[in-house]
Image 1 (cartoon, rainbow, N blue to C red):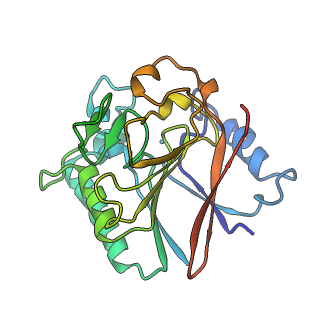
Image 2: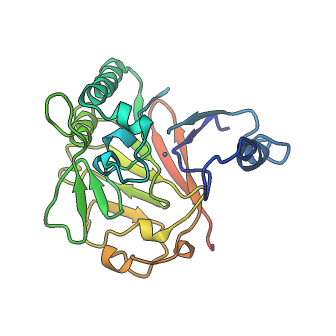
Image 3: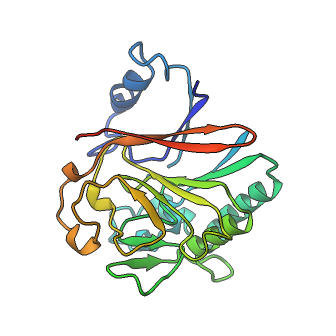
Length: 254
């Protein structure tokens, strides 16, 4: 029986929560009503756009969001992406990881660290075609926030990093050394709006699975593809003291 639900963000389309009634019509009535007794009494843990779960706000990490012309640029971003704010959040993450004595530790953020879309966060493999890189907004030490987060996931051997943002289901491993760094990277962003064009990684050996319905996963051919190329789905995690299992649940047709 499920114990709780983790929500990785991007749930209200196309205009966000444009009225408070959207929370009732699009969430409470769907998951908290008589038709869904299995989820009606579960606790939901949310990210913004025993297993120990550590939730972080990754939007301030994204370099593009600091551009004044970016549609996501606003007061929330501009007060949380300063070097001091980024450093404070990363120190919180490190402290939580350092003090965790759980059998399994997961970190949850909205954006992928290692994923399948055309922008890769946290590391730079310049030989990968059709890809842009973002090491993250700078902390007080001058290092990128994404690169610092990736380093923490490796140092503390985190069991899994779960994210949304890309509207597909994917599974990836460490792009440099998956044997030494065993963190599993799980994108679970297809619960609401599915978009196969968010997954493109034909030349990416670290990408082990994607549910994108595109005939080719090359980012250069994913442009202008429609959302019908994606398939809705979500992940179920089953864990005990000796095992940690992630099961993908998805629609066979869209």
